[in-house]
Amino acid sequence: MKLNTVAPKEGYTWIRQGIWLFKQNPLGFLMLVFMYVFAAQLAVIIPVIGVFAVLLLTPTLSVGFMTACRQAIQKERIRPTVYLVALQSGELIRKRILQLGLIYAALILLLSFVLSLLVDFEMLIPLLTSDTVITPEALRQIYLVLLFGAILYIPVAMLMWFSPVLVAWADMSVSQALFSSWLACWTNKAAFFFYLSIWSVVLIAIPLTIGMLFDALDFGQAASFLVAPISMAGLTLMHCSFYATWKACFTEDEVIL
Image (cartoon, rainbow, N blue to C red; front, top):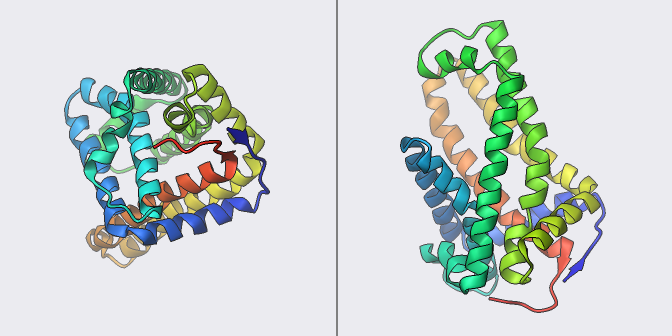
């Protein structure tokens, strides 16, 4: 396994490649993303355990989606069971991928704790559970949550971006995979900054702009019918582009299916 260094402009190329990959099997990829979103929403209903289960299985699901990307390129059929491929790859890989899940869950819980020290969540809870008018101070807290959350999540994302596939496809230990993932992201940080900036516009700025425009025209309820499919399509394209980041940052010595 060889680590590659890419130019900043590759961030845009990854997105184009993700779009190309999506076109190979749009229904299959949309099905996988819908399944994940649906399962995550169901898990939230179960206090604590549900959220922990989603975090624990996130690396497993990541390997499954990346495997689906390979299958699409090879013109193979994408099935829902592809999400289980990491757990079916032998005892050692199954153990390592679940260890990654435990680490990810612990990091997210730690991140949440630190975030609770920086932001006043007591002010935000009523806004999420009632129709209370948002005050300027509450709006400030919302922006702080988004800002601090994004900053705190960056190192977690760097550790977890490639580590599941490095464990499943490159037969790396958990510690090797985490370090290699962080090193790959840091080495190509300019390309990743460009890449994530574009996705921030597509997945956050555009839906917010559409929502505000419809609200201004007094068509707020109709906005969801337009924003939801746009967001789902954008989320699916972004997941497809993850495979492009993998192929650009690493050269595989041997393909392990």
